[in-house]
Length: 210
Image 1 (tube, rainbow, N blue to C red):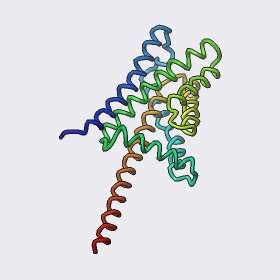
Image 2 (cartoon, helix red, strand yellow):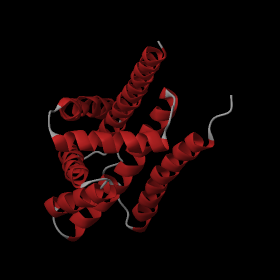
Image 3 (cartoon, rainbow, N blue to C red):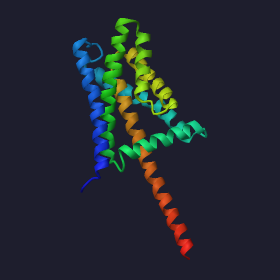
Image 4 (tube, helix red, strand yellow):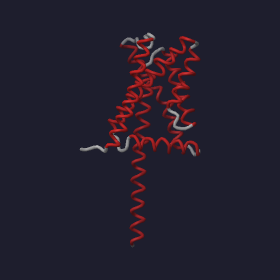
């Protein structure tokens, strides 16, 4: 099967950008040694993974509210995100969306919560590190003002998890899992919407011909 060039380019671009964030984090972590968030036993890994899954639930509740909210700003945000997904990942498979979400969760958390936040905290305070890293995270996702605000708050949420748990894994799991569920839901709902509109158009054209 030959995939459309646009589809391949968008998927590769997303993986390349998110992967580059992880590489940048590793370089910074090597220059400014940061080890405390990456040290964990096998037992802690299981607990941190479960905590990450649980931490996804509040994000999904907010996502569901935004999708169904009768609020013009929320509707515009959904249209912006759907347009972005349609441009980058048209007809992407579930496996491809899973790969994108996984790379995004690892790459972004390594950089923003694993490197930037503790570095700023080292030179100031943990709260300042949390706030500054969250603002940078929000700016990185600034598709619109509302998206910037929401992304900053989500960044603060992930950063708080790291501060409390002293581990990066729960934030990585929550980030990747949320991204995967949101991407699958939005891309599939877009597909259903296109199919419905196409069927309606065919019915209208049939009615005109009759």
